[in-house]
Structure formats: structure tokens, C-alpha cells
Image (cartoon, rainbow, N blue to C red; front, side):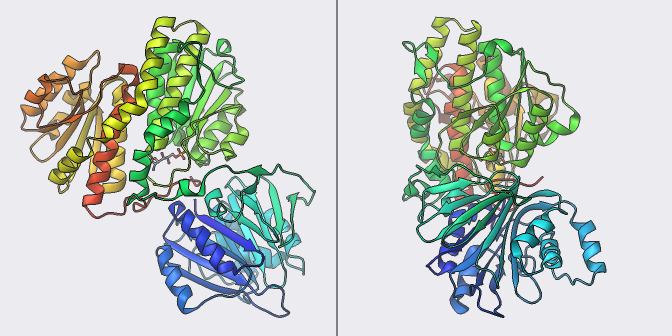
Length: 608
Ligand code: M6R
């Protein structure tokens, strides 16, 4: 999940690379480096600068030691093998400074390869798996760098995106096995990157590499082959994202900008999908709902919580049995699937390795597969039978906000679509839910207006070290998502429970040192929720309730009330999550923490 940028053309490569890495910094940010080639001058060497720390440290180093040249590679790292320091930072170079390598992913058999290479006299400097590739390619090099990379890759197992340059060759060699990589086609210049945003200021014409693709990139052209050297062709796509969309638009943090974008995101997710006088949903899917008798949803982190909301929605509206499981567990427990099972994977990036592998397991077992995705052209989109895009636009903040809301909205659409097709959702109920969905953009705007009040609550409790989140029914996942958001960006310990579970254990924790955030919006179980809140109050607990503006009763039981617009219970998770996002944001901001790049995390987790 590190960032890669490679350039060959007429500009100073270091400038293009650092600019691109800045746009990818959210992918990983514990060290960074650049290698520049003097482009084929005899007996020349590569120049390198790499530093532990954020990209700003590398930028400072490049001011003191500028790198000149028009072919180069750059990297921001999120450490897997070896701690973040200057030596382990990429690029990795051969001893003679001829060969430079950058790599995302994991070389799974690196220890075995390392032993063989050590026995042959290679000297290793770093603790990384990547350095094995330097020595392996050197071992195969007989004057043809492309041939050397190809032969080295035949010995390697794992998931990787690899870019290679050699001082004696005017080419960048790129290879992909699982980890994402995209090529940018310019005018008398060409690019390679791990993600599209790095390319947007320079070109919108891109080629997404597939697994097993190699690209030979020169200033004039790009040649594609498989790992055996056979020529292949890939479609050129035109990216229609606005480059501005990836900027902060005046907000202090991407996360806050993305929270405020949510009303528009909902409009985009719903766009053109409501039909038939507001009683039906149209989705461009190949799936036949009548050939499904069971649904399995799998995803990671926030996407997984959206899947938990999906479980409630699909069971209620389509009357299909649904199971939800974290993708990192899914494929290792030999799940039982068949041709009538619909396996739904959910992923903002479409690159999360656990989710991708869960999809592959479902396909191996012959299940039908559907992905709820944000990024087009991602690895999951290329392997899945059907994709339902959420159209949330690029999400930069590591803590997912708008993608979560759009995923939940996509599950609402899918559940209505399945329910209508299967005859389990009557006209009147469908119309009621669609009406409520149509109103969500305005309601989310209103929910955001509570930010000021939420900021006061965040200020009051920013020094506390534990939080408890409670929610039940379709808002139990809202509580889970609230706890995850707070943990991720404020580093405050937070746990979430289904409200009714509290008395089976967590109630022992209640005291005046642990705020309890409880979803108490209108629902079938509202009265029971109020009783649970009273149980907390009876033990000197501090209650922060999410409640509807018309609810007068709640004020008597809660210390703080965050007002949340009232909607159909099945639609309420779309609205209720806003307060959770803002509480986490305002707390982390007040603690002076790096909201967009929280410690130890990366936006897209492409290693297991
Ligand atoms: O790109 P994905 O949706 O597959 O990512 C899944 C999780 O890694 C992601 O949601 C993660 O939990 C976020 N940091 C949550 O804010």
C-alpha cells in the first residue's frame, strides 16, 4: 500500500515524482525516496536520495542535494518488512549504483531467495524483502534489463507491483502481480504510478495493468507483454475525475471536506437509479435475483460495517438469509458456498488484499459475485462478476467517511432492487423507503449543522481515555463505526456493543470516567434503548445520546443530546453516522493529531 511514481520524458523527473508522491502520501508515509537515471550515459550511475519520515523530510533533503535527470522512480513507504529508517526506505540499489528498484506488496519467498543469494556472495544492506529483487535481477543480468527482470520474476512468489530502472538503459520496467499499478500516457513523456491521482496533473489517458502484465516504458512509447515476453494489449481509459476533487477545497483536513461532501455523494450514488414513479430501483447488474437463495457479505474495517447494515436491509426487504464476515477470516475457514450463493464484497479502494482474496475464494467455489466499489478499474472490479459503484469520488482521508455513507446507500438500493425483483417488498413499502432515501442529502446537511455542538462535547471529553458506543438493530453497525472512527484518528480506546448486550458484561465498566455514546433515534426498540440509558445513568455513567429533534423525553436521561434528523428506521444509519464522524474528527483535531494520516494506518491495505 505504498505509493509509487515513475517518470520518463522531457521534464525534471524528481519534480514530477515528488509532486505525484505528494498526491499519494495517504498510501503510506513512514519513509520516502527518489532515484534518478542519467539516461544511458556510458559507465554512469543512478543518483538516489531517501529518508525515513514523512515526504516533507525527503523534500528538504532534495533541496540540499537536488537530483537532475529526466528518468526516475519514487516511493512513499508503509513498512512491512523492516522498520522505517533510511536504509529500509525505497529505492533499493545495487552495490554499483546501476540498478534501482521500488516495490509494493510482499515477496513471500524472500527468505529462501535471500539464503541462495547470500550463498552466492551477495551482500544485503536492509531488512526488506524488496532488496532480494535487486540481487536476483543482478544475478540474471547479462546486458538486457528486461530479460533480467523477466527471469527474476519467474523465481518469485507473492503480491507485488515492481518498477525497475538501470543506469545503462533508457527504460522503466514495471511488473504487476496483484498490487495495483497504472500507466499514464503523455505527449513525449510517460508515467507509471500505484494510483491515478499521481498522474492527473499530467495526463488523463491511462492503462490499468492486470496481474501478470509487464510494461516497458520509454519517453516515446509503452510496450506491454506478459511475464514470458508475449505482446499483449490493454484498453486505454480516460479518467474523468476533476483534479480539484482530490484537493482539500479550503477545509483544514480531507476528512472534514469529505464529511461535508456527503450530501452530494448521496445524490451521485442514487443518480438515475430510482425509477417507476418512485417505487423501483434500477441497477445495471447481470445478476438474476431469482437464482439466489443466500447472501454472504465480506469486507474489511469500515466497509465491513457497511456490510452489517446491508445484512439488516437485505434480510428485511428481500427475505434472503444473509451472513457477514470480515474478509481477513473468510477464506481461511473454508466457507461453504455454492452457485446459488451471492457473495458481496465491499471495498472503497477495490484493492484491499483480504477482500480481493475473499472474492477469489468465492469464485473458486462457484458462487455468484458482486462488488460494491468506489474505484473503477481496481483489481476487484476486474475479477468480480458484477460491480455496483458508489460514485463517492476519490477519498483521501485515511479514515473513511463518505465512502461508508455511500456504501450504506448502495446497500439500500440493492436491498430494494432484490426485494422488488423477488416480490418480497410491496409497492407501498418500497415507495416509503425510496422517499426517505431521496430526502437523505438534505438530512445529512442538517446533521452536519450539529458540528458546533459536537465540537463542545469533543472538547469536554478529549482528555478521557475510554469511550463506549451503543446502538441496536440496524444502528448497531453505526455504533461500531463510531468507535472505529474515534480509535483510528484520536487514539482513544473505544468499544462498541449492541445496546441490549451491555448488561451481559460491559456494564461493569460504567463510571464517571467513560462517556457512553448511545444511538437513541426513533426505532421499534426505542423504549428499550431508553431503559438501557437509564441503567447507565444509575451507575454514574455519562450519556451522550443521538436523538431526533422532536424527542423531548431523552433530555431527562442524557447528559448531552446530539440532534439527528428523523427518517425511516431502515434509512437511519445513513443519517446517524454523521454525528459519529464529527465526534471523532473534532476530538482528534482538538488533540492536535494528524487527522488525515493517523499513525500506523494506510488508506489502502494491499498486504495481508
Ligand atoms: O478500501 P477498502 O474499503 O477495502 O478498505 C477497507 C478498510 O481498510 C477501511 O475501511 C479501513 O477500516 C478504514 N481506515 C476505516 O476508516
